[in-house]
Length: 278
Image (cartoon, one colour):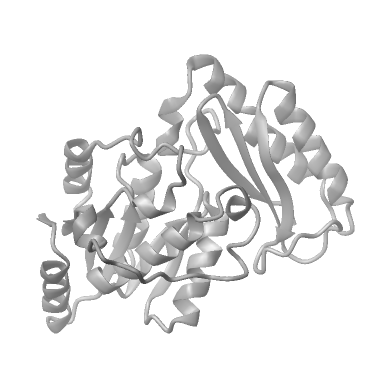
């Protein structure tokens, strides 16, 4: 397995694979890899001949006061996990490699990125769409895998991939959960023992909500149920929304394909989860 730190070297490596008839898959990450990430690696390996995991803590998707400096960085462990999983290369660039000092160009998505995580973090998705575009151009993948836990992000990245004509197939990876049901996240390590226990209400209440929904159900009542459940154990709700699963349009009556999106704070950790309701 190679560790590649320069964009040019990564491009040349990917191009060399392609001249041999190999397809290239990419799993973009910010490191601190866990079993959820590795499930995405496994999915990618089933759909591409060569596999690249990118590890880059992207500063432009963090707002002032967020956890950029505290975000876990565990490269030695990440490297070992990738080696064990049969990854062909880790793309591990520096901030200066990805963002030259006089960089002034951005990639923005104007509809799906609004509201939800984009509402409380208004600069977040501009950072995400810009860095993913840069990673596409560095790795030159045929396939890219993103997890469904960050559901809004997945839909935004699907949209820019389509709109900007990238010849890349997006594969969604199902949410990977701890045995308790908590959606795996690098930020779960911020949770105290009690906060981790309390946060289990997110998935428990989402499952209960899904069991209650049928055609024409009142989704306002579902959202209120989830808010009450999460708040009852001290969770601080950022948002709870019911949306069309494709367009992310907010809906109050269950029709078509419905997804429920949740973001809530438990202690210092902002946790995301979602479930298909209909």
